[in-house]
Image (cartoon, rainbow, N blue to C red; front, side):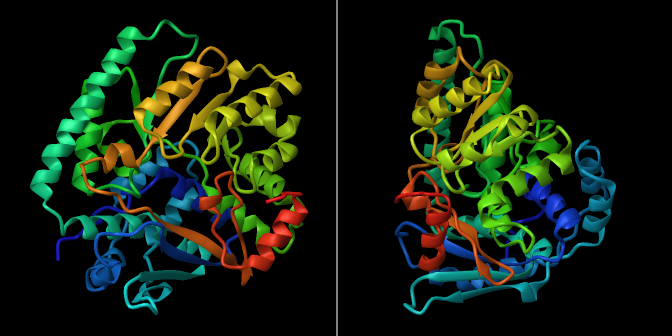
Amino acid sequence: MTPIIRHLLDTDLYKFTMWQAMLRRHPQVQAEYHFVCRNTPEFALAELLPEVNAQLDHLCSLAFTEDELAYLGGLRYIRPDFVDFLRIFRFQRRFIEARIGADGHTLEIVAEGPQVHVMAFEIYVLAIVNEAYFRRFDAGAALVEGRRRLALKIERLRAFGAEEPARRHPFEFFDFGVRRRFSGAWQAEVVRTLQREVPEFFKGTSNVHLARTLGLVAIGTMAHEYLQSYQAHDNVRLRRFQQAALEDWVQEYRGDLGVALTDVVGMDAFLADFDLYFAKLFDGLRHDSGDPIAWGEKALAHYAKLRIDANTKRLTFSDGLDLERAFEIHHHFADRAPLGFGIGTNLTNDLGLTPLNIVMKLVRCNGQSVAKLSDSPGKTLCDDETFLAYLRQVFDIKS
């Protein structure tokens, strides 16, 4: 077996930032995460089960190295007690199970146990499934095509830089491609190439291992699971779960990592909770579902209503972007607010093969269902229709 995950830093930064917050504030929470493939693969993912199990065995043998811990400890928002926890942390194999689905074709992966022990499985599992899947294709031909497409992206970026008139806020993008990558080696090649060829546009990566080894800025704050988990916390009313989650974040990071995710129950419900207090404390907002232009206009209108200069805030876009769509969004907003673009699949799995649309999402906390009611209906993930209906009622969401 050739290991897919070789370093425990080979994951998204926001896994560590959420992990720290949960460990320090809600270490007792029990959680359940499910793997889901949203599109139809070229062959049944159940065929990958032996490889996935072997890779999970290997993952559970890894530990953070002292050099990795020193890097994390050098980030000013990472606390010494969290680093001490990571020093003794090991994934527990008994908390994760991979199996063949009842139909004989699907791959089921369930991680269940204390949230601080199972929440970090997500990105590694997605990277493992992706790489195991794409190892069955002609890697040589795929890499030739991937390099051709990457070269075209670089040409397009340079042309954009030459053609775009001066704007108040520059075009900046980041690599958000760990979870959907063709392979770890290909992601590293893409990131190194962009860092070398277009540093004026390429500003960082969510991959902590690559950020460390290449001297890049590690990018990331929070994901849906962080806010979703507050739907099931014993001392939090459901209607106030977003405010409780944001308040804990403010208290934990005290000005760092100030970009808030907006689409756990939709942008309108988020803005109803994002009052002047939070709008002043957070540096900006992240879009991950729904029409990005409509979302951005709502964000700018909200800041204007609160009499906050949007030029002091950042709008980050991360929903299935490619460069052309990012250029369009930048053209629309670049004179009105600082922008950032997190691009994933189109950077790290654009090699002429159809990418897998896979996720591993939080479905229960403390035995209670949790859900995401995103502004893109296909992104809603919850197996409890009763809870979904209740959540819609509580937040007055019509559909």
